[in-house]
Image (tube, rainbow, N blue to C red):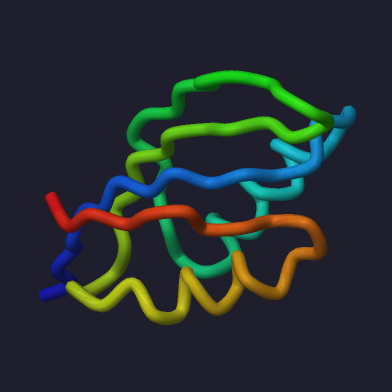
Amino acid sequence: MLTHGTISTNVALPDRPGSLGLLASAIGAAGGDIRALAVVKSEDGRGYDDITVAVPGNDPTDLLNVLGAIGGVEVLSITPL
């Protein structure tokens, strides 16, 4: 049986067309399922988003590694739900 853990993460990314789409595709490639997304603010060329993601199992390490590999993306916080 496949179990999922859910996390809430706050990320900063370049505020330019396609950045959020790239981030969403990377989450899917890591096996994550976006459950909620809120664009919090745009400031100094950076976008700040809150994203709730269901991840396979209870370990978000793969997801965090994938996000960290995207140029300009910074994971600011992560909270298990």
